[in-house]
Length: 391
Ligand code: HMG
Image 1: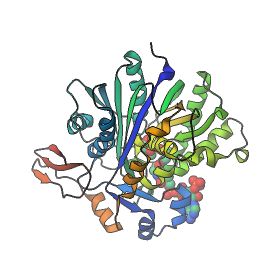
Image 2: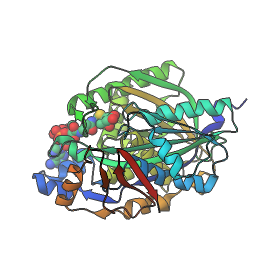
Image 3: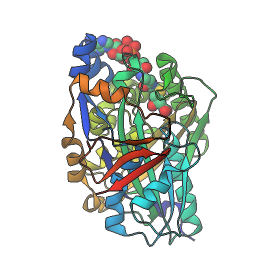
Image 4: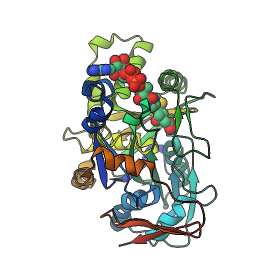
């Protein structure tokens, strides 16, 4: 039987949107000092979905390179984590399965618990691989984060998808040891079925996040986890990048460390490059942090990384991973930079128009304007059915 230490993330790829809105444009619109965005929350720009992009097109774009490299023979499960779901019944993953031409002998399911969903998917995937180490699981985290225009949350929007191939003898990160878990019934952030944008109590959400950091760490320690200083880096869920720094300061003081004596910037700074320019990608956010960490030029071979995954509402998990020797050969650093650099810059008016866009609900034929230059697009809503195409 395969041991826990031999299972983990074998490959990772992310995709983001056609467009980007710089925070300078948002600040000029609402009269905010840019220092609040750049330093106060640590965000420089946000990815904005084109009219013909959604969680499915982003997910297909993220997963396509994994399928191209590894094929589909061993993938018998696709778990799609999202909180910007497009259907109450059908899994968004089934559309992706079809767009990528995957075989019918696959189980496909969608998972939801706010931003935590992808971590649940990863843990379930590890369980499936334990059961049959010859199988691989495709985990996809894909989200478009949307708050009300002119609300405090607006500056933390973003969108991206991360695809992870989970299997035995992973080439990137082994997931090791116990998990620290924490669930609390809080209304810090939620989105009722009838709303497109999330509702949030900003300060309450930060407090709830920090309580979850404490709660998961306590449980992780009680489960026999490693000491805090065993980790070379920490990948936090990043609703905005400053939150990761806040969280780590909080964890250090909870554990009795003098935060001035610890180089928090070094422990967190290598995980924030992508999130600072993509924005909150909800379920994908922590894994975008991992992508940035692995793509960073500093070698991480055999080093331990701590992961803190948080989903409002709330469920959180702390777990550890060890970076595998030779991991650099398998990275997609250039493709990741290209995904970010290729985005077209929107002005504020164009962003606002996209934000306000929604499909009529009359069951008619509603084609979308051709905007994305990516391989997958949402071509229309026709007879209440989403019509996707692959170029
Ligand atoms: P706000 O009221 O606009 O901002 O809301 P603020 O007044 O709290 O200022 C933010 C920071 O900027 C502060 O720093 C200010 O001092 C600083 P802090 O005190 O926190 O260290 N600041 C400046 N710095 C430099 N120069 C300046 C300047 N002015 C102010 N000129 C808030 C901010 C994050 C609450 C808001 O954007 C929001 O509601 N965001 C959405 C909720 C959110 O992201 N919550 C995070 C935790 S919950 C979570 O992570 C889950 C989530 O991802 C959803 C899910 O799980 O599905 C959201």
